[in-house]
Amino acid sequence: MGKNQERLSRKAYEAALEPMRLELVQMSRWLAHHHKRLLVIFEGRDTAGKSGVIRAISDVLDPRRCQVVALGKPSEQERGQWYFQRYVPHLPAAGNVVLFDRSWYNRAGVEKVMGFCTDAEYRRFLHDAPTFERMLVDDGVLLFKYWLCVDQAEQEARFAERLADPLKRWKLSPVDVVARTQYAEYGRARNAMLKATHTAYAPWTLVDFNDQRAGRLTLIRHLLDHLPDQHVPEQTIDMPPLHGKLGRESYPAAHRPLAPFVPDPAAG
Image (cartoon, rainbow, N blue to C red; front, side):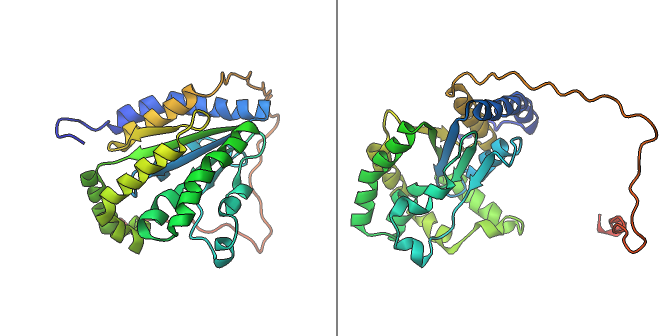
């Protein structure tokens, strides 16, 4: 971020996000009511903020209708399959939303830059991806593809934060350490990917994530604004008052809940 740009405060972020959360719940209800399928792909550089925006969306949705997919390194068997094959089982069913934390576009990014695929495999992917996505869209899948942008200085600050924080250190990998030196190469690979796979039916949308809070709001607002009218009348649930004395938990003699945890005052 530029020196004169102020980051969005947590208070302002939460205030702006709250009405969007209600819209996300309405969106999920609309998908279920109309048996629609929503697939959202999140791509971007390491530390860009993919998991944060995915949590902002998924935290308010019914986990039975919202799946987050973050596939690891392909197995030996998967490497011998059609490239898109391991992603197909995770595509959304009717009424569901699937959020891909990285996707088949690994081939156009990390695999290309780090040499994890051959040049022939890479070129075949750029040729085949639009056809694969055309099949999804023609079958009724609502497909959104987001690239999260982050400057190298901001990326370096986030890498340093992860290294210093034991609760975030798991996010770092040997590939990340090498990728730090390949910022320009990743940019060129992204630009080639955009040129080959940005289509009218499955366009890419770039979002500035140098300020992650502002980036989340921008992305979620765009997603909500580019779906059809999502208003579905909310089901009315009648909850009459209970009569009589309210019950308390009771247990067999051999079973009792754990004693409540009491923090050590000295640890504070």
